[in-house]
Image (cartoon, rainbow, N blue to C red):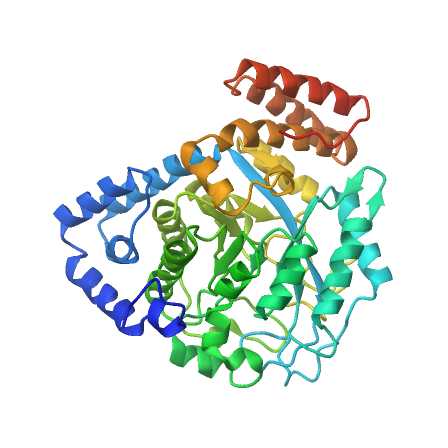
Length: 471
């Protein structure tokens, strides 16, 4: 029985409720009166239910779909302005005891090179990332209680935060590791992590169990209930995501929103981020084996609908996607992107991009400088800001600021300040030239005169060699 307040996975992601929502969507996909009323509700910026959003996803009317895209673009501007937060993944270990059939790290893959970073290697990877200009990382590791115990993860986090190289510093470490216990989530919180990220892969229980035939990840309920344990352990910010292409996308979309509704109902705050990866080719993995792939247009519509359904939630897209796809979905709602990612263990210290330990093929292979310049030429402000996390503006405190629009008074100047640091320390001459123009123009967009004066003062101090200012 569907119950968003339940702590049981099969009750807050109730299979029959998903199917009924999809049936309702099919029955109403041409009901223009209902579709118009849902779009009008979305314009209030309070979000949509999984059932309402499913109706819009099923709608095939071109004019209505254009209206949905335009609304998503406007809501994105309202809450996130033209800022795009930059990050990079850091793969610590590809040892894994699970048998996930879509991941090259699966236990049965005997020809992939297994690797686990030592603390010295972690340090070298972090220095390489700092030399690019990164300030925010998402650490990744396979599930292996012997090779990758929680103690190893915690030691790596401590090492990452300890490294100060030239003007480089990692100011926020997000963590994407397997579902674990409340006690371990508490340890991660104490280690100073930002967001805990865990992709569901698929919410369809029967498919989930087939796709995860062996290993601890086989336990659907334990995996799906992980966010509740993380929040019980004191982690304010959690990030959801499904791997599109494993199961029918409309099922995943409805269930993903149900999970967000569940977190809001139980904890008073929804997900901090939602990621939208699509399955890609990798060692031992052929994405064509999974016959639920989605077109770029459908993918873009999903992104637009996530934006209008959960307007306050950050949306992440990785280098799995091409420059062209990323360009479209950034406009429709994505607020965070990775740049210059290497999805192999120890990949950043290698001059040539290694492929032998990659988790997936990287479609966008540009340098961070190239990605930053591309964003700026598109009218965006690449942001390396970590201020909210470091000032304790997380969880419900972040959401209340976001919902009131007050976050703009912090985020816009912080984005300019951190972009200025990047331009001074890491940018190529052409990138720096474009960036200085962007900063000059965007200073005018800070409505509060006092805040603008402080920002201008901080920018001058950065030119003089000082670093790490924030609102």
